[in-house]
Length: 113
Image (tube, rainbow, N blue to C red; front, side, top):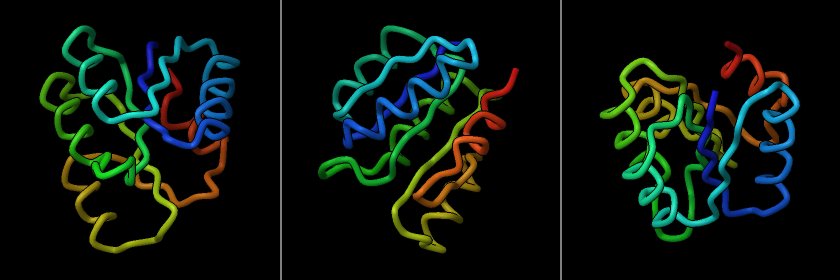
């Protein structure tokens, strides 16, 4: 499966990518919302892993765009804060909400084929 990752922390982007690649996925990592949004216009990945806070953008916006083109594909939304409002917004998409530090096993399970 091809997975789009939006994460502005380079070390976490590398960690998520290597974890998913070790499970056989193709991963495209973007550090900016604009670049990830542009990528969604050009391809339809099989899954999305996005941080909530990416610069002045909210990763939930990207999740909504992704959901519109990939109705049944897995989405994981990652946040540094266990915020009930963001968690509820993620559920409505629907997406899995994870709090940092994220369990790599949880990520693997979300994108298991």
